[in-house]
Image 1 (cartoon, rainbow, N blue to C red):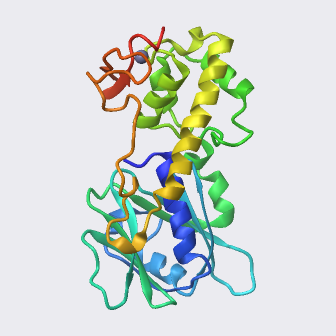
Image 2 (cartoon, rainbow, N blue to C red; image 1 turned 180 degrees about the vertical axis):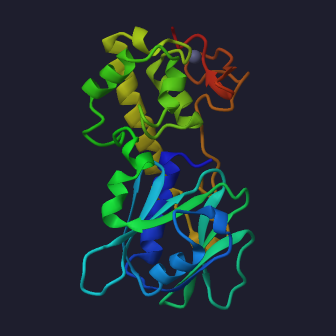
Image 3 (cartoon, rainbow, N blue to C red; image 1 turned 60 degrees about the horizontal axis):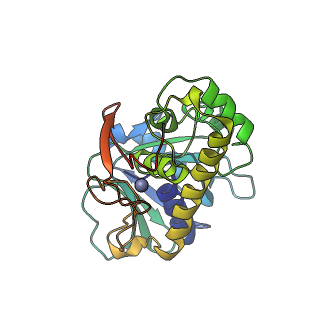
Length: 282
Ligand SMILES: [Zn+2]
C-alpha cells in the first residue's frame, strides 16, 4: 500500500506527464470508484479541462483543473490510491493495461489510465472552493514536512493520547503521513518502543521522534528521485524497480542493523509492528 512518500512520487511523476495537458475526453468504467457525482457528469465536467497543477494533501492526490480558458483553476480531481490504485500512461495505439477503470484522453495523443486491481481506490471531482470544506480533508493533521507540524503541535498531540505510540502514529488526524512501514521505521530511528503510551513520552524523546518522523519521510521522498516512477513502463510501481531497504519492517528474526539483536514482530490493532527489543526502550 502506498504511504505518503510513494504518493508524493506519484504526484511528481504525474506532473512530468500531464501538467498543462488538456483532457479531450474521459471514460469512467467503474462507477463505484467515483464519489459525489455520476459518471455522466464526471465525463461532462472533465471534457476540455486543462490540468493546471498536481499536488497532494496527505495521501490524497489533488489534480487542479481549469475548465474555462482564461480563468483560474476551478475544479479539483481528488484521487486516493488506497491499496492498489495506480496511474499509467499509454499511447493511443497501445493496448490498455489490465484493470483499467478510468481513461483520460489527453491532447498529446496519449491516455492517462487509472488501474486498480483491488478496486479500493476512490475519485471525486469537486469545485476548487469546496475542497477545504470536505470533511476527510478537514480532518487531516498538518503536513508532516511543513512548519505546521511543529514540535509544540506534536508534544500537545502526544499528551492528549493514552494509545500506544505506534497506533497514534497511524492516526492520520493526529500525525499525517506515516503508514505501517514508516511508523515502524521512525520509532526505530528514534529508539523508542512502539508499545509505549503516547502521553508517557518525555519531551527529550518526543523531540527525537518528531525529528525521526521528518527524516524517515524525507529520506523516502529523496529515494524516489532516483527510483523514479515511469508511467510508460507498464508497471507504475510505487517502490521503483530496486528493492527498498527497511531497517526493521518485515525483518523479524533478522539481526538489528545497530546492535545485532533479533528484530521482533508484534500485532497492534490488527497490524504488524516490527522493532528491536534492545534499541527501542519503553
Ligand atoms: Zn538493536
